[in-house]
Image (cartoon, rainbow, N blue to C red; front, side):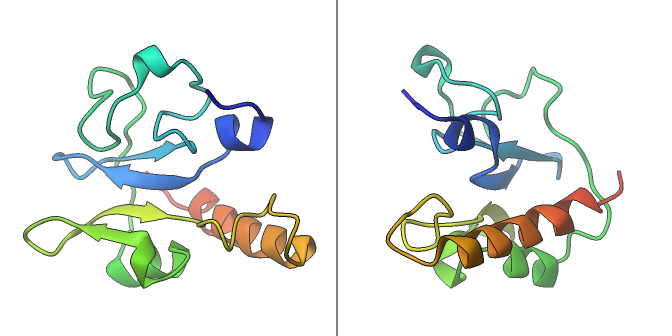
Length: 120
């Protein structure tokens, strides 16, 4: 179970379903705000009955790659399409106190800013 606001309510990543719609998910791979392990599923293939997936314009591979913490922060399907993007990892986690916290927050919120400008 998640224990802090950041991991429950802010995006760890985004995932695409079969309809080319995207959802943001938290550190437990659940929709933002979810913290009950009994409801845990797989972003992109679970929660399909909930209105949490949205089609966005201009989600190019370049845009998605810029969001990922690194190349390893991108998952592709068997056709090579990007289906999951992770915004941070253990090294780039903004609440990681072993690094320069301000720069990690800046990098993270720069990604959130890019996402916030997407149109449906």
